Length: 496
Ligand SMILES: *[C@@H]1O[C@H](CO)[C@@H](O)[C@H](O)[C@H]1NC(C)=O
Ligand SMILES: *[C@@H]1O[C@H](CO)[C@@H](O)[C@H](O)[C@H]1NC(C)=O
Ligand SMILES: *[C@@H]1O[C@H](CO)[C@@H](O)[C@H](O)[C@H]1NC(C)=O
Ligand SMILES: *[C@@H]1O[C@H](CO)[C@@H](O)[C@H](O)[C@H]1NC(C)=O
Ligand SMILES: *[C@@H]1O[C@H](CO)[C@@H](O)[C@H](O)[C@H]1NC(C)=O
Ligand SMILES: *[C@@H]1O[C@H](CO)[C@@H](O)[C@H](O)[C@H]1NC(C)=O
Ligand SMILES: *[C@@H]1O[C@H](CO)[C@@H](O)[C@H](O)[C@H]1NC(C)=O
Image (cartoon, rainbow, N blue to C red; front, side):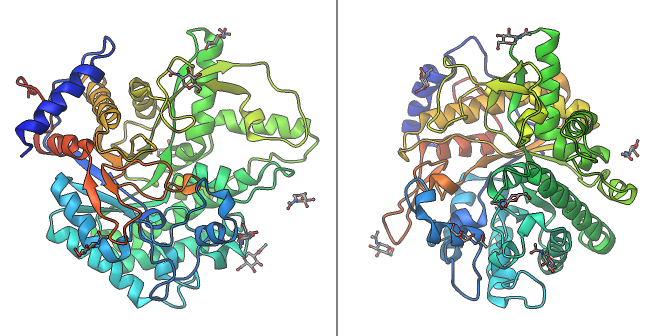
């Protein structure tokens, strides 16, 4: 139960934030089977970077060799120390009352060489213990197989740009299904492969097509893993497999035909690039035609966008049992003159449109993450319309601050607003949103931002060896949402 004092505090911030504009929060209770959860990923929370047989990942390598590439020079060597404190993690998840915990497996902890020639028993035991602890507390595990932490052994072989990556990943995924599949009913193969291919792959801008090659390997690796699960594990384990894709909400900058067309093009390049192969069996037509035409104009014999074989299309087509979406913000799309052919080519020029976030929108503490929760409704409708009304699970949503304050009223307001627009979309547009996952249950290592940006419902004291977890106001608020399935904390509450 939330104390009377907490209720009073909640009332005050609701009055001051949530009703700041004309939008009226949705008072309809979420359905009983709607899934509320929270997320983390291995490198961002586990620590124990070199313990118990774990090998080195690209993130261990980069943070150690080039600390200047991280905003505060930090690394994930200890992070939240979840490797040793997983019981504390499960305790705060339980306290929050979530249905599910989304976390990822560290490839380097399970297969230190990167290959299945050697399985590291200590790493396996860690994840088995975590899964057992979750089950014992009635929390459903949602497991991401690969969340950005590439084994260095594989990066030395060119990582995602090596076509052999398809087999490396499929072998690793099969090991995970085999070892953990009895306890896992929701799997996702990759987290945000677009970000992986645009920013994490050491890119050669000269060639200008490496992101397409990366994506091509990721997509085929995903399909191969999906089909392995379907053939070898589905009958006995009865789980569902998907892939976590990320997108902004894109909204036309004006209601002109040009800006509306530009918005469709943006969605196809940003989300359709991965979603269309997985749900419809091939790259979007607009990507094939634009990249093909520009490649010819550059004097190339073939398109810089690779083609799938017929067999690959069949394997990809329908290779996700649900649509897993990470989304954090909204952007306005503006049509521009088609960029002239220039060297080197770039994905931005291939897309040939632009987008921006107006100055007057509320800032968060990170670039590109302005507060515009209303965008989720057109985004969910776009997914619903283009991918045959899939079950949609929001696998990440949240907002950063740079203080870790316990009175995180802006985070409460953002979560409340997003959920309200999601509820509107379910109710008024009939879109099948089946779950929502807050990023994150606790403050953690935010990649190149280090510990300078904090997304947690729980504050973590990174200066204490105990890494003490302390609930913020948002933890209290989200706990109330999980308990009541209602977004509004006042005398009237929700209607069923
Ligand atoms: C390890 O990190 C250093 C410094 O950033 C980099 O030069 C090197 O390429 C990295 N190794 C691999 C295999 O990515
Ligand atoms: C790609 O992987 C294969 C198989 O492991 C390896 O033989 C080859 O050298 C790798 N390519 C590069 C560029 O590292
Ligand atoms: C990028 O690719 C071009 C063309 O293949 C090559 O000449 C150049 O050396 C590469 N640059 C890097 C940094 O790998
Ligand atoms: C597209 O929207 C922007 C505002 O975001 C506007 O400035 C521009 O004129 C619009 N373009 C067209 C062709 O309507
Ligand atoms: C994918 O499957 C659907 C439904 O079976 C089919 O209509 C569509 O043509 C397939 N896509 C491709 C690219 O083969
Ligand atoms: C957001 O930050 C930018 C740059 O610091 C500033 O110009 C703008 O006024 C801010 N917007 C709001 C709504 O505070
Ligand atoms: C860490 O936790 C231990 C055991 O609860 C406690 O005795 C100790 O004072 C804590 N240390 C700090 C720095 O919080």
